[in-house]
Amino acid sequence: MRLLVGRIGRAHGILGEATIEVRTDMPELRFAIGARVQTDAHGELVITSHRVHNGILLLGFAGIHDRNEIEKLRDTLMYCDVDIEESSEYEDDYHVMQLIGCKAFLESGEEFGTVTDVINLPGQDLLAIDTTKGEVLIPFVHQLVPVVDIKNRRMTVIPPVQNED
Image 1 (spheres, rainbow, N blue to C red):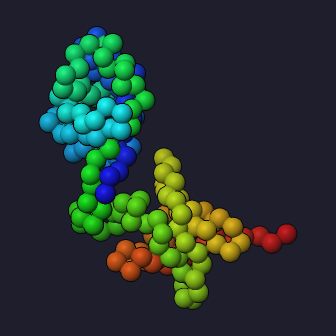
Image 2 (image 1 turned 45 degrees about the horizontal axis):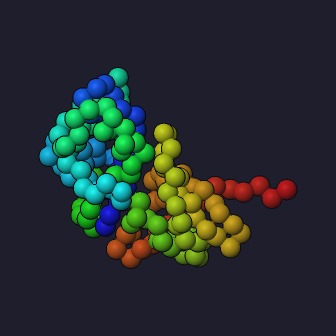
Image 3 (image 1 turned 90 degrees about the vertical axis):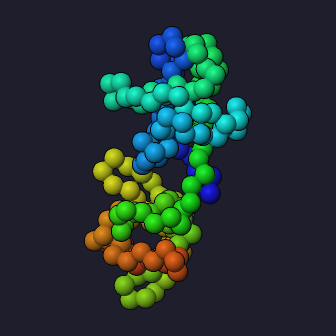
């Protein structure tokens, strides 16, 4: 599956490096020297340099040797082909695309809704679940989402208590 892994930002320096807005949890793998990323407007790019400067990832690409050339790529989205069925080294590690579309059930077995989005926040991720009463956001933590069954596209959720005024 083709997944978004980053966005090319401003040029950095005069040698053709750019800042990168990382949108993957595996930047060391996706942006390794020699790795290839796809773009819609500029075809495939081969990464030739990878370094972190003041907490910001900087990448260089094959055939791009100066500031003017890299500026032409500004705001370009980068994609990688990722096998979302590939097992992770962590038991509770999921791709967003594996979660979207899963049916959410209450502990009683009653259907609650369908996962429509995963919102990545600094503290934790939130599951956006479309229910008959509208969208409900549930923190994606084990205490509130105790069971995730990717194979059967279902999960058990414990939604926050809603005050009925």
